[in-house]
Amino acid sequence: MYFSRYSMSIMSPIFLLRHSLKKLVLYFFFKKYVKSNEIIISDINRTYEVRGCHAMNLSTKKKFEHLMIYYPAFAFIFFWRTKKKRAYLNKLFKTGYECKIFGSTKISGGLVCFHPFSTVINAKRIGENFEFRNGLTIGNKFNDNNLLPVIGNNVTVGANVCIIGDIVIGNNVIIGAGSVVVKSVPSNSVVAGNPARVIRSIES
Image (cartoon, rainbow, N blue to C red; front, side, top):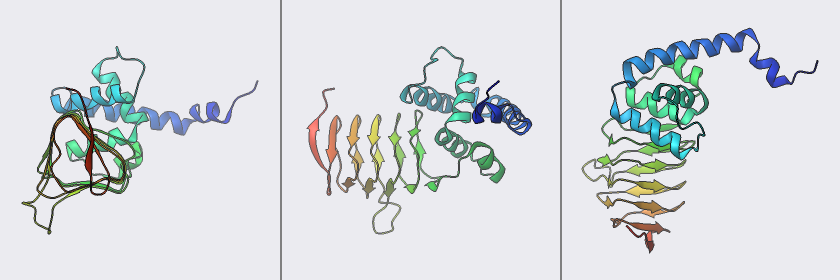
């Protein structure tokens, strides 16, 4: 009988032990950190929707387990939310991203990220359903943390974007890849370029 290399690997004792350990750890995490946390539950539901996961009728617990096992970027967000920074957790869930989100940054629920390499986020606050990609820099101006951006709800950011200074990004905004944003952006708009400018409006 023919077995593929993949099917052989998932039957190996090491794989089964590792998978069982993940399930045990996730049971503990869900009970302690997720079950009553509306912000993390919002992250789960939003990520599940944006990622296009097919089994939408799963319980929150099953969605959480699925995302933690198969989507390392979600695991990174979860560990940032819960302030869990342990090497063995990074190794178990493969979350070794070079991404820093300042602890002083307040981010509402629905946070979604895609392969967040080379990313630094330092903002006053960020609203609901913030979605970002690799190479993002959000930070202060003149090395002064009083001069930080405020970002509204439902903002989507492309790869390699800079958002700098005491500016306000409105609600329902899309920022194109490679943009450098140094001025405030009105709600319901798409911006792109260096420096970024409004290229079209979004009907509310």
